[in-house]
Length: 125
Image (cartoon, helix red, strand yellow):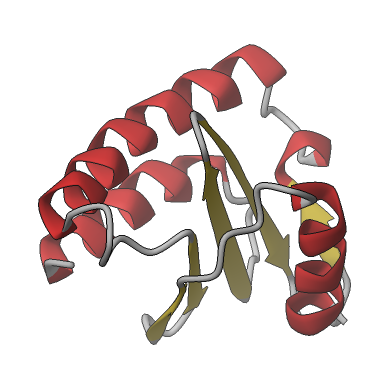
């Protein structure tokens, strides 16, 4: 994926990050016909806060945000083609500007809820 896309996603998310954030982790998971997105922030205490629990972030605004991000990610996935498109996109950014992206390609359509639980244990604990 183009580096510009990563920056575009982060530029959209930064407006929702709380003051004093140190680390941010964004999750996008795609299954047949649907997607799930969420992000978490950490302020140096190793405790991540879910985006829906952050002050000033309404559910409606976050849903609109994720729809906007989905437009870009869906376009990128479509360009890759069905056989090469990733299913899970994780982006980690720290307040110093370091960014890391991780792609996964396994189909989690059967139990995305269980996968997201395992993802949280891997990245948030």
